[in-house]
Length: 368
Image (cartoon, rainbow, N blue to C red; front, side):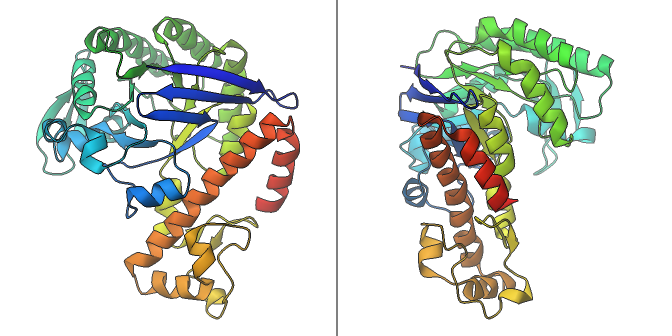
């Protein structure tokens, strides 16, 4: 039920044009996945996501485990029916969230014991539990439970986390079994240590059947460090499956990632900054709540084809954001996601025409 077709490789950059087949539809790659952490992309309805070109969305195992509970989602018929999203879904394993809890969690070989951020109740999230939850949620693509060592970790810490991630991956595979309805993506770790990254990739590859993820980046490191890690991994990554760079979603990171052969991305950035009144535009980011837009009756971005830009002015959006009207955050969210999805569309076209390098140069000059 899963298949990846590599359609073309850009002669300028080596970027890849592909097509990932899943039980709920085809994903044209490279692709950006809007994040619907709690079974919703904040404030947006499924039809709006379809209208702006979202092919797949991501939901979060940790949050859905705590509320409403994976058993309730399963009783509803799985995430697709629960949230009325008919296209593909990817769920992360919850690992990044529990490791981010810092003082609220305890790591052991069994898994991670953590205190809920909601009510303080204690839970164990293990590789087996992460698989159980994701099976119940019913996403098309599910992620292995891994240990994400923090940026700045020393080599010993990074190596311990890497080895534990591999042991947990083996347990995830066994718990996942042979189901053909969900594809398990393993995750490459190793922090900022190039040799550990290569060891992780080598040991992870036997578990990768139709996709592989790169985790532990975009966690506070300088962008140059991220790019160096991707450059180290690139010659050794499989060519016959999609490569997923987790947690990356600013325009510059997307362009740099695609040019380095990455096929899938996700990030909450677009909707998070939208709710605070920051918008991506073809001329660079703008903060729409600023006074300079008080009497600016032009669209948010004249080059954008989204509902927001076709119907509303900067002055109106500024008013909504500054008086805390929900519609303001909704409209800027629609725009920001459409901006990123359209960027991906443009890059897919450029890859097919062997012109991605030219497009990226042009976009960097425009966007800044």
